Amino acid sequence: MHGGEDRNVGNAGVWNVEGEENMESNLMEALKARGISRREFLRFCGLMAGTLALPAGSIGQIAKALEARRRPVLVWLEFQDCAGNSESMLRSGHPTVADVVLNLLSWEYHELIMAGAGTRAEAVLKRVVEEEKGKFIAVVEGAIPTGADGAYCTIGGRSALDIIREVCPNAAITVAMGSCAWDGGFVRSAPNPTKAIGTSEALPGVRVVNMGGCPANAVNMAALLTHYLAFNSIPELDAYNRPLFAHANLIHDQCEKRANYDAGRFVEEWGDEGHVKGYCLYHMGCKGPEATYNCPTVRWNDQTSWPVKAGHGCIACASYRFWDKMSPFYKRLPSVPGFGADVTAGNIGAAFLGAVAGATALHAVGSAVRRRVRAGADARTKPAKKDEPREKEE
Ligand code: SF4
Ligand code: SF4
Image (cartoon, rainbow, N blue to C red; front, side, top):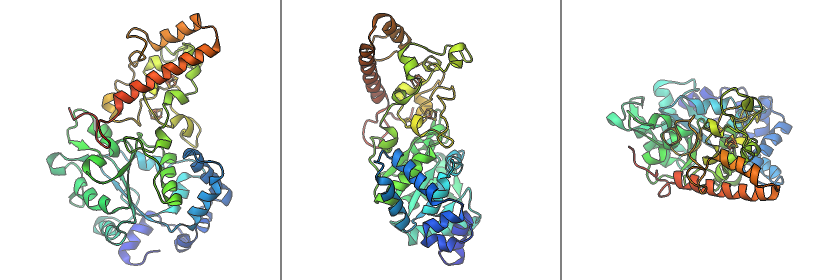
């Protein structure tokens, strides 16, 4: 445990658990103190390996690396947001992703949950930046307002912009967790009265890993941190600096309702027979054909379900500027690219059923549709340049 009065404000204030001194030196002891068995820890490692798309053989490697790792310090900065990403992280399933991740890292500063307050709390942040320079992990939650000289969000008399400019360039890695921290999210959506921006826009030249989602899925955040701790590197990123393990595939291509889409079976009204039968939600505005995320496989609530399975269309919450670009959320997407402006997915499904008897042919045409849809989605949301938003603020 770190010594000194101020240090205790951050460390003990956030995770005031018995036996913390032992936890620092022995991860398994720490997990045991929180009721997590080795079997559950290995289950967590298996979940991480699966999420990162690593082979099953890597589970032991991850476990060994995590056990051997010194706990790096983490600071969690919270600005213009609803705290949904903190909630997502802290209320994850069992064995709690949170329990394991919280013990892998020394959480020294997290305003929402730390007991310390005022100048003593801010002293903790200052100390981390000075003493852990180049070694600590910075997580940003929430957008950064730039209007009125940053007056819309201040902490300890300093603007959010001032704080991240001091903290993040000194971190080993900076992670923007959730839509607001990534691209400004809901706060930045039109008309954006506070002139909010995302973390990487506020920090030109600083590499920021963007964990999209509203909120971001805690399993993905845990997988990112696990990869960093176990392999000392961040996983491969896409053009938006989002982890590819979470964004390699369209929601539509992973959706369990996909067979209904291909067969032209759609929900036409909330609560109709098709809805009861679990038909495709495309006509109800589902944005799955234009959104990438691993939501259908990682799911929520201990991998129990995800919104589309529960009967609501995807609103593309892990896509760039989705509040502006994907709304209205209940309006059906335009026609499938490549089949003419008048040909809707519904027509395509019905036409296939009538004209294509063979399942092989159906599959081939379905693949062509997927390729064209993906090309359309990429063109619609791809940034002009790496790390830069595709369009300027309206
Ligand atoms: S449109 Fe939505 S509900 Fe239908 S298959 Fe695609 S992702 Fe699933
Ligand atoms: S279904 Fe779509 S909008 Fe809903 S949580 Fe998953 S990625 Fe986000």
